[in-house]
Image (tube, rainbow, N blue to C red; front, side, top):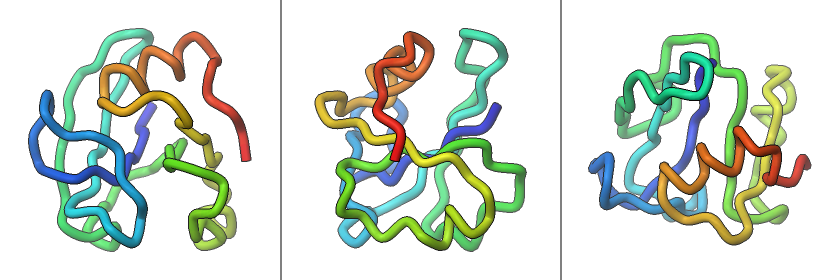
Length: 98
């Protein structure tokens, strides 16, 4: 499964989720079951050439209709900030669906 998260920097352990309009990079998290296989960073969403299953955003006011048009599930991380917190909440079904 591939999850895309807009983040503030290109660092696996220091980056936190940010607004789509203010993000510095896009983190593509590859999961195999409950394990993070890899985290890749891209400057622009258009550079991501893989099948994306879910996009996690910071709130329900984000501009997400392009993802919805592509059939990608949108999740909201209201309390979670780091990539690890977001993945943990995703696996425990704590993220709210848009």
